[in-house]
Every structure is written in structure tokens, then in C-alpha cells.
Length: 437
Image (cartoon, rainbow, N blue to C red; front, side):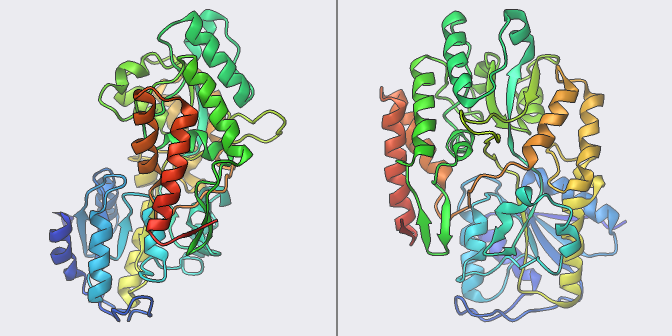
């Protein structure tokens, strides 16, 4: 069996290495690029966690020649974007498929200047049919499907069932009840917390979950941002109360000290991948404690309201045709749908619907969650919840981490912090060329 070729790539090395892809085209920004056919060899870019996906593909398709380039997987990093800017200027060098390090990357990969990400609507129609439209909504750009979701990452409502049972607490049924109970628990059990504010995904857990227009794409050049909207102020008021009641941590879930704080987490909205990745593998919370409940609604609303943390995106090149395109689409279908990656190796709930039950069955065998059946059903119920949120040229998460926690740590309140966040978000949006409504 042919061994997969793994290349480590910095931005500079990637430019040289991926010239091997043999793509060429018109370098004029926005103009159609010529499509090339390598005869079958493909080059794919993946971050470190997706290297096993590429290796599994090579084992499944040993006759397809493939170069796998391992890239910087830092969320918010700029090296990949810069490499693509160089490829666009040169008219060659693009990878045939890529796992985007940041979901925001799909914004520049689909704009008229680059137009890298192929329209998959027709050429992968059978695969697209297997996705819940809510899961794939982030790839639906102007009515065209421009990427595929590796995993689904909607927020559910996590809570420490052992703690709740021991202390006689009742699970909240609305966001407002969550805030009230968080303050009550913090007063009765000092040190116990009900959420984290310091990471880039906190914006999704709280503002996106409320429908706040921070990433409302009007068009390629227009964005709607309004932190004074009622959907934003209700989330701000909730966090203000919780933070004043010492129920929230200013740390982020990926911080070095977050594991110690995580031992004191009694409840929080959080992505489905929190269960295995954070609670079990990273924070080492003992089995039999954490359980997921369905997302919460806001008072007066009948439907649940939740955010989405990650759920990585695969894209394919629009610059290829023939056997090169055929093999790239075979790769795209495998890494998004095949159980040999999505069930056997992936730690996240697959975005592709037909293999989700197989992945969920593994939770039963793991016997980690306090209530496995409820956790499984909660994951399923969260999949179809949609909030209007688009990935943009500005990095909302970075703006959040640069404004919110520093403001709180320096003595400000949540209202101050989110005001600064909103002001800077508008500045960032304008700086990358958006007209802001």
C-alpha cells in the first residue's frame, strides 16, 4: 500500500510545496481561473487533527496519488489566507481540497477576489442531501453550497447532574432561569461557576444564541451589526447579572488554567464536542457527572435558541477539472461521510446525518455521561436549531477576546465590555471593506 506523503508547511514552505499541485489560471482578481487536470494526483491541506482523516482516505483509496500538507491549525491565524493571496496573484498553487483552520476563512475563499471554493451544489448533490439544512447553513452562501461541514457543533445545555442531584437543584428551562440559578448557586457554593467568557467561542454561546446581529451578512460588501438590538441587550443583561453574582469565569475554555476552573463548572451552554474533548479528555472530569440537556429558549419564545461553536469546514478548489476534480470530490465525500473517519476516528459529532447515529452509539459504550440517553437526544435536538450567523472577513472571536475579558479583568462590567466589543467589531468590519448597516 502506498504511504501517504505528509508535508509540514509554514506559509512560505506551503507556497513552494503546493506549486506541485500544478494548478494554473488567470491571475486577474475576480476573473474566471483556467481549470487544470493533473491526471489524477491531488494535494490536500489539513490541520493536525485532520491528518488521520487524510491517512484513512489513503488506506481506503490507495490508487489515488495524494500529497497531504499539514498546515497551521490556529483558529484566527493568517498564514493560510496569505498563502492563498499569493496563489491568487500567481494564478497557480492552490490545494485541491482544504480543511479551513478558521471557519471565517470561507468568507475570503468565496468572495469575488479569490473565488477559490467550488460551488458544490450540483457536483456533490447526493452528499448534500444527507445534511440537515441547519447544519449546512454556514456553507450556504448566496444560495450556493460552497463547503461541507466536518462535524456539527451546536451548543447544548451542559450540567453536572451529580451536583444537581446532590444539592436538589432543578434544571433551568429558560435562559433567564439559567441566569437566576447561576447566581443562586454561586452564592450558596462559592467558587462554583456556570460559564466561561474568555474564549473566542463565548460570542457564539451567548450573543449568537440570542440572535444578536454581529455576523449578519447582507451581501459580500455589506454587514449588519447592531449591539443595541433587543436580542443583544437581553444577552448582555443576562451576563451582567451572572458576572456580578460571581457565576462566570473570565478565563477561556482553552486557557492553561481552565481545567481547574472546569472542575467547578456546574452548568453552561456549550458545544456537543465539549463532552468528549473538554470534560473527558482535557479537564478530566470524572465519569458519571456531566450530562447534556436540550438547548434553552428565551422567556416568551417556544423554540430553543442556541449558538454554534466551530464544526470545521472542508472546501474544494474551483480551479480543477477532469480526473483531478473527480479524485478531489472522492476525497471530499470520504472525509465528510465515511464511517472510517467520521465514526471510527473523529471526536466530533459528524455533520453528515446518515452516520450520526453510529457515532452517538459510541457514547453508550463509553459510559462517560451521567445520563447517556438524555445526552444523545439533546445532541439530536440541537442539530436543527438555526440562528442567523455568517462567517465574515472580520474575526468576531478575536475581537471578543481582545475586548471582553481585558475589560472585565481591569474592573469593568459586562455592559462596558460588550459596548467596547461592539465598537471594535464595527471598526474591524469597516477596515476589511464592509459597509456597515
